[in-house]
Length: 271
Image (cartoon, rainbow, N blue to C red; front, side, top):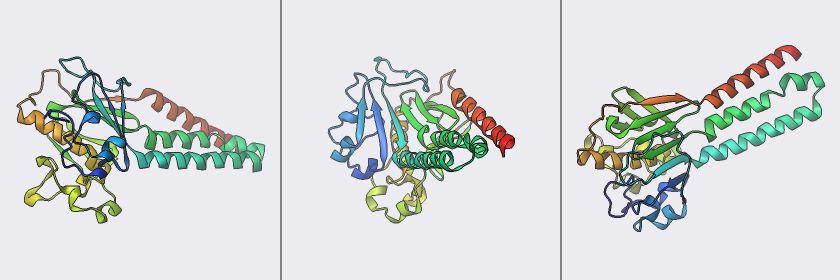
């Protein structure tokens, strides 16, 4: 931010609601132009943003920066994590109730379903995020992670969730769903003001998923602003090795398969 036009999000005149229901973590090195140091940011943005030095970049390709800094933004919807915690509490009640009221055969038949539900909840609501850095955008979905270089992004859409259109197809981000009906009803003119130019369709219209009150709209804002800055400078020429990549999250996949097999086997054996 600040005076650098190439930073992920220029926040001048940005409504304070941009991070009201979202956790956005900015992991930065020594670059003075990092989002958390933007003097023009409304207080609510800075107050609700966590800045860290370091961080796990294992799901991202190395940032292609000349000055050696490692700066990226990690986005996950806060509402999803609250939902995960509530769901885990229900699972715990189920396990305790099973252990105190069921017969040994019933316990053996159904006890593995508690861990199964807990793992599925983690995969669906806790693990997913979207990461933005100078190498591109990474969508970490429940079982797979997609990495999209900036030069391969053709356009950004938010019809159902944050969706990146590339020459190799569409990449959807599980962690950035479009706006709910309630968010659309509560939208104000500020939610569609000062957005990147590529947000607006014919006649100046925007999708509900572009509203800054939505998860998809908040991430799309960051992605579009940086993508437009690179486009305007003519820096979106694909390199020979640029490609959209995807990778399975092996521990999650193996764990889900193992717990599923165990739960089904125990249910069939003792039911």
